[in-house]
Length: 230
Ligand code: GAR
Image (cartoon, rainbow, N blue to C red; front, side):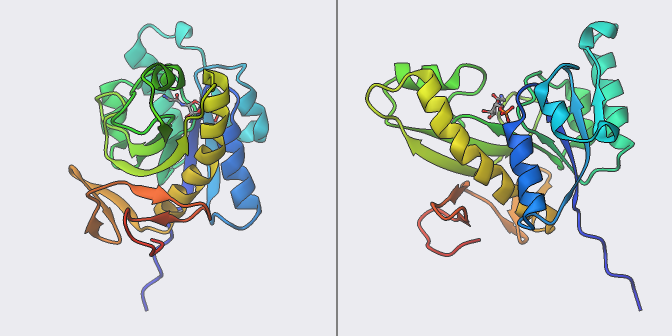
């Protein structure tokens, strides 16, 4: 009799700041809503408040200034991550651009949450730019990371309205509220072995994903135009 393969449930999380997305993952695990374990939390900011959300044994941080180059920092970060044998590496508010070698090292298991409806507004200041452009809708995306910034396949998105009188902070708060269930929902797919990136194709249950899944008001992911939860 062959052993049942283990679920790909080991998650490493990269953070740079507050860590509310990390907290959403931790809360979902505690509530039994995400069958996963956090194997490490990694930061380029040793003082990041996010780090204090997990036990000291799970923390790794270093300042890039202590390294000779961007590549050297990312190599050390990558070695520390690899030592925890993660199935998935999640950038949850990691605000430093990853070098190509790092991305290639973890390609296919590296996810990022970004506060815009990609491909709109890659990069920084997404909320202010959406308001300045007169957008009526904004949101968040979880995507696979590729060397080009914020350009990998988008797995799922959550949309929010832009309201009259919104400033960047008000809009950011509305987006953040949907980031948390969005990230947890995508991780649920990931740790159950249903999500994969094979070459340039992203699959869910083995079927190519042509358009991002959408988060509904119940916190479930659906294919656009269908009422069937994925
Ligand atoms: C989140 O809004 C996340 O989408 C964003 O940083 C914030 C982190 O919040 N990430 C990026 O902008 C990546 N380009 P958190 O630390 O409370 O999770």
